[in-house]
Amino acid sequence: MQVLVVADRGDDDAGFVGERLAQRGGELRTVYRDALSDPGPLARFDLVLLLGSEDAVHDKTRADVVAAESALVRSALDGGVPVLAICYGAQLAAHALGGSVRPVVRGEVGWFEVESLDPLLCPVGPWLQFHSDVFTAPPGARVTGRSALGPQGFVLDPVSSRGGVVAWQFHPETTPSTLDRWVHEAEGYVRQHGADPAVFAHQTHARAEAARTAAHQVVDAALAHLR
Image (tube, rainbow, N blue to C red; front, side, top):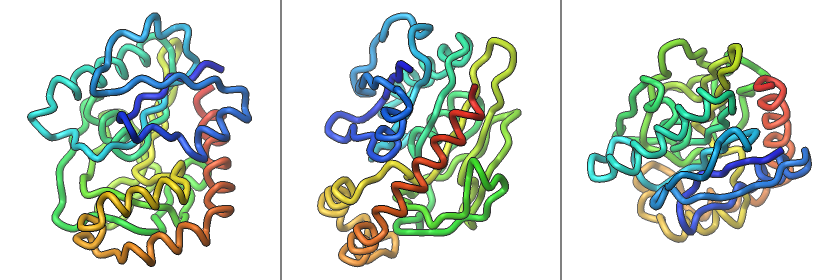
């Protein structure tokens, strides 16, 4: 299984999700969204994985970057290659396919349960959250979970030769070491959105094994759905 990972430079760890994909036979190749160029024929990939970002889909100064990644998503799906999308990646996929993304004053930063509309593709959690942007699902998508802020996941089913999408607003991939770095680099942001950085980090370390298990389970469910 050849997996194309789209990530931010310096924040490209696919974590527990990448770990499970590798266990399922995945070979991951990473491209950086700030210098996204033609990765070659997408047909040679079996999956595209869109990771999170500190940037915003709605940031007009990044319109070219967003447009390039959006085009990659549409090209992948048109070629029958499915897309797995996380947080910013979910927002980007929604935008690329006709949905929308907007900022909110108070985001979700910390560990949260969600209202599940699909217990396999979007279990209740708790899930690690680190966002202050919210998406609306694209036309034809099925929302798989939600919170008071908005959708927590969506799917587009594969149809004929067209690839499908499984997207999550939360972060199943995030390891304790990655979260430690995020908290260190964005302590003010964490506090602004109502979380205590030290408590957040402690919870993430304490829940590491449960988080790994949950991530592996949703990856398995996503791969089964996208076949």
